[in-house]
Image (cartoon, rainbow, N blue to C red; front, side):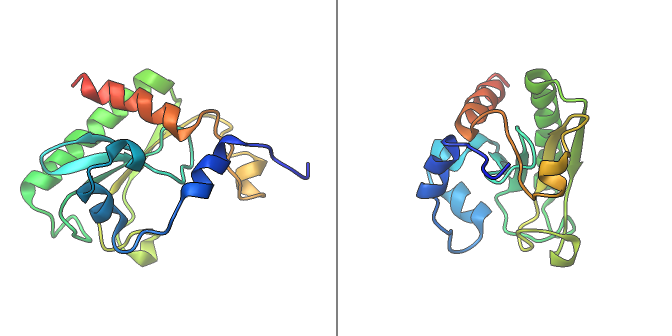
Length: 161
């Protein structure tokens, strides 16, 4: 196959601009939650869709504090990050019925953190066979729904809490 047709991605790619500064600090300080795919805000942290997801429903949970490790986070922020992680697990299981979940943090650049200065939790739904040749060999991910649809489903679920 020479081409993978996904016209919905053009709208996202064409309006994407690099963010100056920490993406979590910038996005959480703006009052543009739908455009930034912030699905839920708590007192200490927020839940945001990963705009470069490994799978449909890939969420990130970050504190408002710009801290690079769990050790440096306030106790209320650590507690809420775990509570939001539990909520994310419940909503993803109910909405997408995955066969498993990856939940974790990469702390520090050497550990693979894409934003090493701001600790955040990843919550990814997983299905048998979701790591196929497209991901493994072609470094391409095929997602069955647009980020906007995923956002609406998860925003609605978190609003019920």
